[in-house]
Length: 312
Image (cartoon, rainbow, N blue to C red; front, side):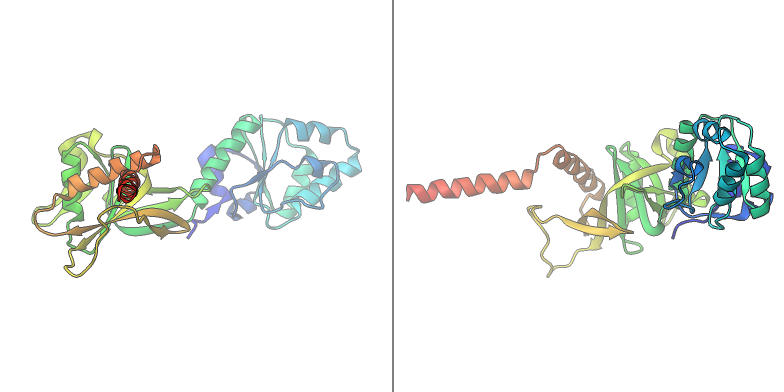
């Protein structure tokens, strides 16, 4: 579920100056989209998105200064009236119109100010809100950066996920999270995984206990977060189950609202899971570059069979 963000969180994050309306600091922010009410300053409120953070920059305030006193009071009261409007931000350190202050106090909406340019402010606030409001979930597994590919290792408890991650770290790859992986979905449906603060950089190995990967292997063995590209599912080898031997059938699994490639690896004594996951990561990179070994093999096999049929 998305996290709750209040106006006070925005003020604290960007060190905004509160001009008036402290009663509105508890108002929720429900969307990462921002709005510059330029048409509203001209009196057009037909499609005004009232649930967005409103930004008044130099353009809006310069136009506002040219209005009559009656129009100025009307525009600001209509801007501040909606209860779902989180707050109003004035950029470039400009002075707040007295009509805005009066309307904000009447409707108990927070007005804040910053010295940042309007475009820079909009970009930074949007990025902050997208991260905070993104859909999130927590999955039991291990997230490792293998050759630049985020590999989420899943499977039943005790199957060897943490031991496999330890072997990958020894081989020069980087650990992001063990046991619990917090995942958020960005606006463009990318999945970003990280570790909860409490267990960051820690790895649990049965028989040894909890180890700190950064302390043992150095800062280069860990990273804070990583985009998840492939899910590797470890499962106990089943004798009567048919496993994919060519790699033509590409499975996917859904996390939140995003489908992501799934690789199922059967586990039994003698299989080096770390090497197999390394190969899965390299094979994924080759597919993104346009080379599919299984498809190329199948095409060559088809051509060979066609030539044999022609000879017959």
